[in-house]
Image 1 (cartoon, rainbow, N blue to C red):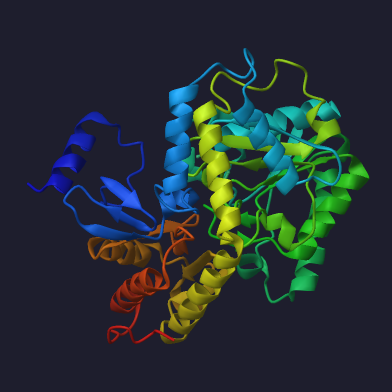
Image 2 (image 1 turned 90 degrees about the horizontal axis):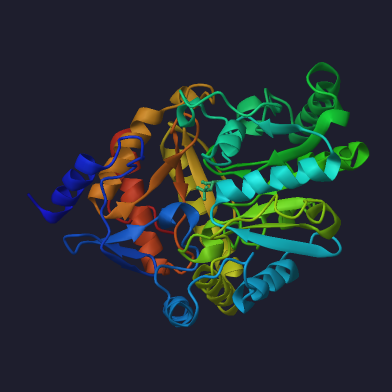
Length: 442
Ligand SMILES: Cc1ncc(COP(=O)(O)O)c(C=O)c1O
């Protein structure tokens, strides 16, 4: 038995099947956009630890900052003694992502925890209890965030779920456009939301509307810009807190610090995690100061939130993103990937849609060009074959029929092209005609 198989067997023996195992890859070490497995094979990483490694694996300055901080101060809990890295990171976050006036931030351990805390703040700020969320949403796996998550496969058997949660269709033009142009579609979806205040839940009961500006697990689906603008107006009209969940979209993934910056719509609260930490568990809620300060002392926070080592890692990671202008690189990678995927779509009828923002790009596989007939099985085959050939890539979407790219943004052009070559060849093997090596390169 090889070392990879041995490790997977040991994992299977002692860890529950409920922890997802999306690929058969193993990892012993990593650098930049390359993971080296337990047998010493190099794999190109198109998953980035599910959108965590935008600044690259084991960046020297990030590792050094972690090591220095670990030697100086490991933990006090911010409730007990105030330490500089926590304050410095919050200062950095509010300067990068001002929420339209005085802005505050605080730190947590995971995306789910950030979402939970944003909802608690919105409830205290409004004195209301209801939350509106959307189909296809993924907000985490703790009980409140799981209640906000849409896909049944992520939550089956785990209820009862948190009450006062109301779900509307996500403004997904590709699946729900039914021949409408985008303007007419957005008008219809905003009317649906207004109507929901009569037919589903009173606006006066709604504390928050929470939405991913580009759905991540839901299949890399961007919300139309005018829908987000309309949402802002509706929230202002009814005194509802608008929460954007930027856990997967944030920190350069879409070519900006925040996906909402593409549209110029500022939320009242926003949630962050993943790539902000450069690989260490850290998350944040950022928000308008008056909304943030509505949370009573002791109702938010936690023992480990904003641990000094995780703060040092986040600060160093953000520095890398700024110094290397990873937002610009993200837009460049996005153009390269979209171009390859679009050309592949022309050769492969199973690819129904290619979409995304910046380097958050996905391609959706459907039967006979019909968005309502997901082709998830073929995506599973493509992914398994790609991983076996040295490309780690993962699916997305309620039906697992989207291939998504979340590569570290420090990937070289050559690594990116090699990864895309493998992906293209496997797509054509399972979903089209075979390709000559490198045929798709522009
Ligand atoms: C948009 C979004 N929100 C929240 C979460 C939950 O984050 P975590 O897994 O860190 O709890 C995720 C994770 O994929 C996510 O994509």
